[in-house]
Length: 94
Image (cartoon, rainbow, N blue to C red; front, side, top):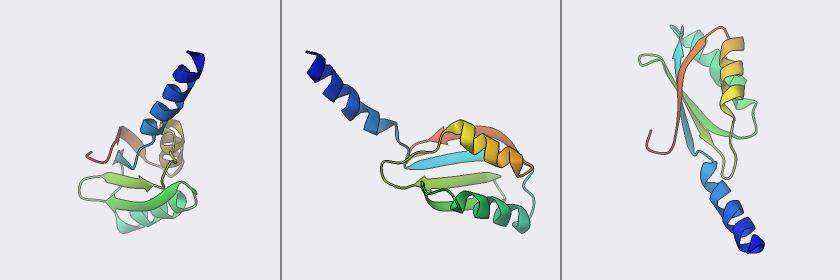
């Protein structure tokens, strides 16, 4: 029984990895803002792609398969860049 539970737990944990992370960021106003954020996140191995939408104040992070970035890490990186995080939403359909 413990084995079945362990297998189920491991298989379910793979669902917790986000393919897409949508971050709403306050304070981004120019292309230099976008470039700074893009440069910072491209240094993370888990990031497959990043898009910054200045008009809507959104950063979209695409993660590599089976990899994730914790909300605390995202928030810290955005804050250290001089901006504020309003929300973080996960999932391919966000």
